[in-house]
Image (cartoon, rainbow, N blue to C red):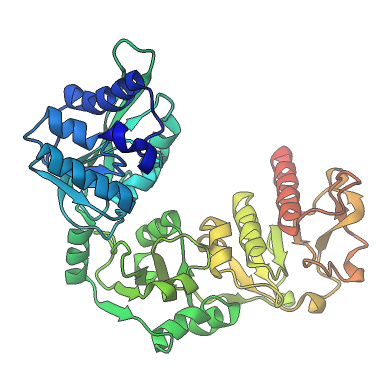
Length: 448
């Protein structure tokens, strides 16, 4: 049947009979000889029924669920099931995503997508302790490592078995992950018992309006709240500052708050188009609403402490976050945000800082143009003295110009320069600041 309908339906690119036997049928059946297969077993992206139908023929007691989204192939699979009278063979004619919640004990796939993406895709259907069986080629170490980094709290690597299709040179690997956590549906039910749930499906909703305002510096400053995006940062902030966390924000299909999230955390479920509007980083993962500390004022009369104080006038939030990250990394005493600066808790700044905003000593200063001339400031300017020849004072401020306008003329007389190739006009402001901070920190270590 596969050979008969292949030309019409483009079921497989393998046409040679011997290759079909080896690369389709033999390869499909081998996992059943290498391990005990769980049942029911979901064949994800089965195509013409590989490996699900050969496994069902070889192991009649195995309950197999074939998942295929292309209608012509679904029709072919139904014809095969009827012709071969295969009982215990289900066909799901749609693409499997995290919202698919029919429970299965195992998943098997020959699909080409990465392991990590597949683990996300089956979040709603694989039971706890269930197995995910990947039929891979020999070079998949990077996929395994990525999956362990992304899904290490939810899955563990159970088996990584190299094998060869008998009597051929074709190398394969059977990679098996075991689920250690509960399925998405059960985790959602548990989370709804622990956390207040607010569902938002209108742009006119006041909660949503306030969330959108947090995409700009003015809204962050007015509400004293911020949106955190990205799995790594949300996890770290939940663990390190749970008292500041106010809400967990997802679309309707999104993952619930983790089991160790504080009970006071509210779960906001947004209609998908609304969630996309506030997920400006494009993480497609839950966001965290946090309260942020008040930034104290700094006046020039307060002076500067020992070490380096970094003055930030950047209007690009990613530059702000990047410089704060460098300031913390190289041991700057404090960071002063000038009036021109974007807010350090802007979502893009938070992400660029790698979470360093949470640990930096931040102060709010005056405008760049109101800084007094008697401040011990060292500016960065491409026509200044080469930075490697400078001796840094014990206490000083590092000043980098705004994107575009640069620095006022009065700060250029004591400026330092980072030598670059003449074909390049200038460095990115955040990059220049990072290099200068490194040179300063190195000089401090050399002086002991």
